[in-house]
Length: 292
Image (cartoon, rainbow, N blue to C red):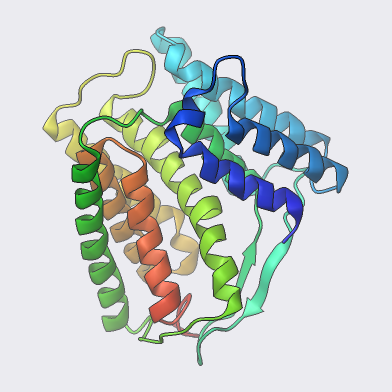
């Protein structure tokens, strides 16, 4: 794996540590140092070009402004700009990024579809920016939040993969390889963190009225609507895999959204999402049986 992406992964991992996220007096937080080095090295190696640098700068500015904006009209404009840019980056629609292939057309199971995984600097940067600038600070009992996350993760894994097996999309296939050792941390930090940050902080929070400088305390009804709608949108975002895969993604999104609503922390939905992906990759056909 190229050094810029190792640094990008380390910067996202460092952003979860509470002390660095608060910063040190007179010092830049470690995630920012690591990310700055990642960007500099990626630029030097030709992995990032000028449009990409401009997009990354444009990403962090509105994300930093959003928690301070009180004017309703300005907040809507800011959200539209931020959501549009994050979506474009996550879908790799912004020019100037050269995301190398990590795994190319691999088949981990007999009869499985070929699978390719890229190292996505654009999508990873979305997760990092939203995590460090918009994620709510951890509050309440951390052990309770961990218990809620574990329970929802177990239920979601059982429901999603059990239903996928029943539908004939996957079948049990326990495996391990060096490729999986690369796949799992990349999937966690560049995919799960980015997608959960996007759908929880820019979709679910907005639907629940928690976006901006004066977030409202959502009613139970509004919170439930935010959970269901954000899960439905998460499923629709995976429609390219087919309607049944989109349905399973929607159920994964439902578990993640519920974990976020019950804990108010970004970590639990990331755990739910990654638990489904990890068990899917390690114990079932990945990504699905060919022709299904």
